[in-house]
Image 1 (cartoon, rainbow, N blue to C red):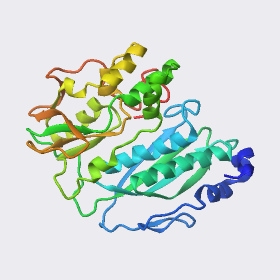
Image 2 (cartoon, rainbow, N blue to C red):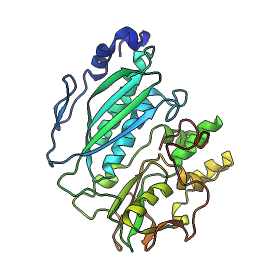
Image 3 (cartoon, rainbow, N blue to C red):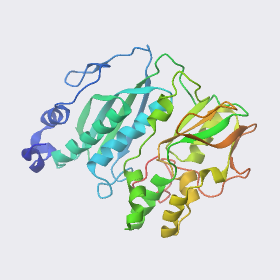
Image 4 (cartoon, helix red, strand yellow):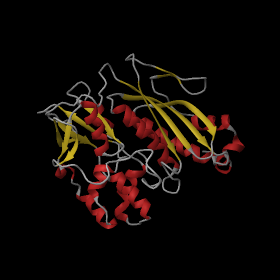
Length: 332
């Protein structure tokens, strides 16, 4: 990063010069036949199909620069899109990123966002192949992710069957805890893990991708809106009921954080969302792969219950809640 870019804004440097700076020196993978610099990128599709997903983050609604660094925000933008692709059983291959920002945005902010994006794209196994940069009243990040199915069928939400095991891979509740810490303005070393989980989610990509060629989930989703909400989507798509075992979700470390905030850890786990863990169903009797743990069962009927009863409290995120229904900075 040059000293010149630290002192100058996007308006002063100009659109194309900024694009040159944030794309220079990046290494594209073998799947990228033509990267940034032309009218469009060219990406190989060895399977003959692409899995495609897109998501958008808006400053003040989905992130705050006083809560997260630009690098954190960049990583989070890619992680939530990569998790959607992996939840379909596909390996992330390419990302296209559109950025909107005010003209007085320091170029260094965009460079750091891009650094974070590239770090997470590489962790997911993909590359950033192009995008756009435009003027906007606030910082907006839109990511489109592409994935390769490797000759396998996509894993959808619609395949769960009565008798299946419900299991999760990854952490639950910690991002919600981090949001609660930030919203309360709390400061304690005990909150470090929660803050990190909210700022930079860590989807366990390998827990899904490493089971290619062996037994696979019958249905799969990533936990972005909240465990209850996302399992609800899966149950509706499959035409089944899901019952969660409450004790299977117990997390003593998260309970300790909740006590410090006079909060309910179970609500973070069930409705907090944004952990970008994976939740799926597996055939009865399956020996779950590494990283997966059972949390419930699939039965006849509809909806999601906890220990056989309808859950109380919130169920998760919806983008168009009324004013005040969700804290600023929360993204599902």
